[in-house]
Length: 349
Ligand SMILES: *Cc1c(COP(=O)(O)O)cnc(C)c1O
Image (tube, rainbow, N blue to C red; front, side, top):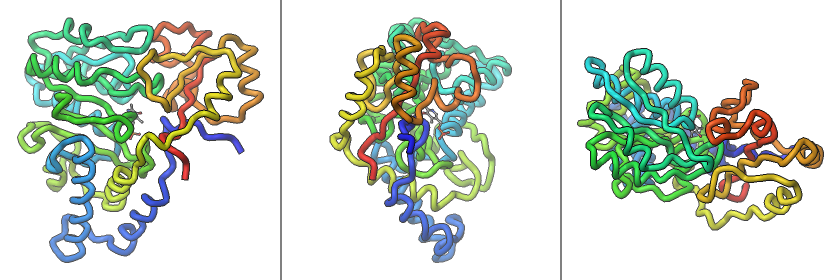
């Protein structure tokens, strides 16, 4: 059996989560917007999940908008702010090593006339706060920089971007798909105005996530999906009770990091000559390694039947080196010898 070491791409649904979802699929299936008893109980279950998610990041339940995942949350945050400024357009600051859903959203907004600055990382994968400050313009409307890089595992200093944004009265959004539940986040302490998260990176179901929006009701964010007023009118569509309940249970049952023991992996990987990318401040679960030559790479591949990613899962279909590895200065040949090995965020059940 190959060993699954691709947890940054997706995780299994934990048994606890699976159990919590079942009844909402075919026993209590009423529309949570319905005003009868069954509808009320679905609404109540969703309310509990909203509290759990909010609590995890120091937010208010009324600031959590459930979406289909982090891609949609990122789209809603970035387009939602941009569309408020359709008339005069404006300037957005991001980095060149964001997830493709952020980069492609920004590229789309450029076609509408918005200006975007893509900050380059250091060779360690860090987006320097000073660089953010340097490119602020009088018409900057949004800074959007991820928390943990999904290919490198680098932890970005989001609290520093947050305070820079706050000082300049600019909105700050962060894609926290790789850090939510794994690192401490407090949206007030860190001056975060919007934050994206995803269920299937934390042992929850695929197809659900959330966007935290500071003072959501008064944010003026423009929805992408107009509908029946669900999620404060910011995201139309019948709320998927089973998925939202599953997300809540995934958050509340996510164990503490002290459960982690990656010594087996570390012993194995140390047998092969490699360098680890991503700098000093990385999460323990994402290892981006460049094998020193083809011989080491092939020896590693022959010895270990591991399911890992070259770049991220999203780049796997194309043969071009990942945009992240190019950005930190790896050559095409080095990128070819590079794997992202991502370990379970905690012991498997
Ligand atoms: C997985 C991931 C996404 C996409 O999340 P989905 O819920 O699959 O849409 C976005 N950003 C980062 C950093 C991710 O790791």
